[in-house]
Structure formats: structure tokens, C-alpha cells
Length: 310
Image (cartoon, rainbow, N blue to C red; front, side, top):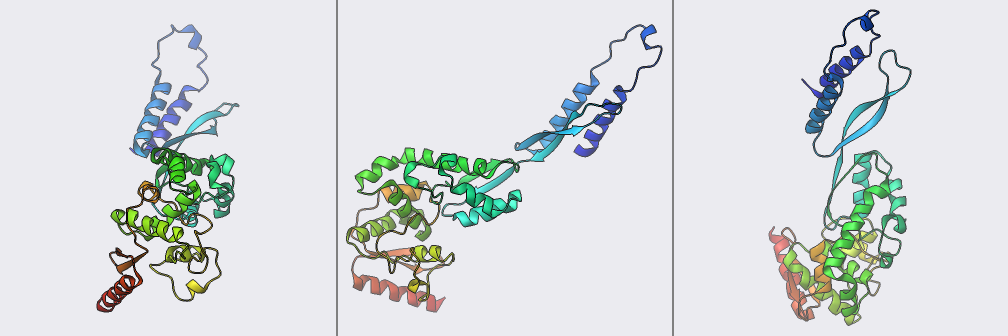
């Protein structure tokens, strides 16, 4: 028997018990009747809960038993919604996914993302949620408000930031917490492997310390709302504030939502004098690192040969 039939039979039993009593009822000895209504309803709800899974949502809807003038609560079973925030995911991607899951317009999530107080954003985040929607799996009711859906992501970020000692670690590194999250976002976007993250972070720190342009493709693509392994010549000529080929320093803010590994790498970069990194095999995203321009040129040539041979 499926859930719908079980609930229908239960409600039918409940209706039968609410029929008017027979005229001679009070002349007959009282018999102890089993409490079928409560037990049946509880059993039906329990079975429905097992079928719907652990994300069960029970809503009280208006229903009437035959002969009743007062609405009675009925049970509606609605499965919860699960969303996975991948490391490096942009808010624009996340909002589209949430819109599809909930039926709410993307604009509602965009508005909620601007209310830092309601979301519990740390003071150093400013008014942007980008960078602070921590990766992970989240479950929520499809009826939840956008802020209720997004707030747990900020809560997990705060937990990860505390575990990484983000605020004090940023101070020791000579950066602000927002700068560290911004660096972590770049590291997350550029890395194909976790083991490369500390080296990528070192390249970024070294170039910032030397007042060199970062020249990172991922920031350019973010500013143009594009995706891909690398920026084109046309892309790097754009006037976007995220174009680190033309604008010095870090971009205005994070370019995605980094995970714990990227945050740790931004706080604790590997030791080294590297100033360049090149994805010599774009398919596997294996990176090699260089200190001098001649070393960098050799890596670019290696990449060219790999692309030609593929």
C-alpha cells in the first residue's frame, strides 16, 4: 500500500468514528473501544516519514471531517531540499541552483545576499556574501526564506574561519581577513589539486609584495561572468575591476567561495620565491612553478607542445 492510500484509509476511518451516535447508544452498556484513530494516524505518519526520508517536513493544512464546522489539522508530507555548494562555486551559480530547487526568483536570493546583518556576515566581509557561503551540503525546507537558506552557509564559514584562526592569521601575514578570503578564492579557482594550493598562494603573496600585477585568468573571467580554463586576449583588455592584467593588487573581493584547504593555503603559503605558475597540461590541470622570466617562458613552451600534441 502506498502512502497516499494509507492516509486515505486512515482519514476514512477517522470520518467513520465521527458519525452521529445511534439513538439507543446511551441505553447500552459502555464498551471500551480501542483508540484506533490516534494510533492509525500516528502509524500513517510514521510510515510516510520513513518513505520521505530524514528531511521530512510536516505542514498543518486545513481539512474537515464529515459533519464538522471547525477545520481540523491534516498532515501533508513534503520532502526537504538538499543543495551542494561546491568549493569555488560562484554565488551566481548557487542562486540559479537554489531558484530551480525552490521556485523562487534569483532576484530574491540576490537581495538576501546583500543583507549582511540578517545573514550574520562577519564585519570584515562588507556587504558581499561572495566568498562566505562555505562549501558543503545543506538541507532546508522549500518554503524557507532565502535568508534562512543562506545563513547556515555563513555559519559554517565562521566555524571554518575560527578553526583556521583567520583574523589573527591575516594580521600576522600583513593582510586583512577579506584579503585572505580573496586570495583563497583565487587559489581555489586556479588549483587543480590541493597540493598545489600553498604554492599558488605563495605566488600571489610574492607578486603582491613586489607590487607586480597578478595577471590571473580566473579573476578576469569572473569579472566578465565567463567560465573556462583561460582568458582570451580580448578578455584581458577589458576594463573590468577584476582584470588583474591591467589593475594592480587584488580584485575588489572574492571571486568564489573557497573551501578550508584554500583558506589555509592563503594563510600559510609554501616557502618559495616563485612568481609564476603555468598549467602545462590543461586537461589534468597540473601546474608547474617558476621564479624567473626565462623559467616561465620554458613552461609556456612546454604547455604549447602539450596542447599541440593533444
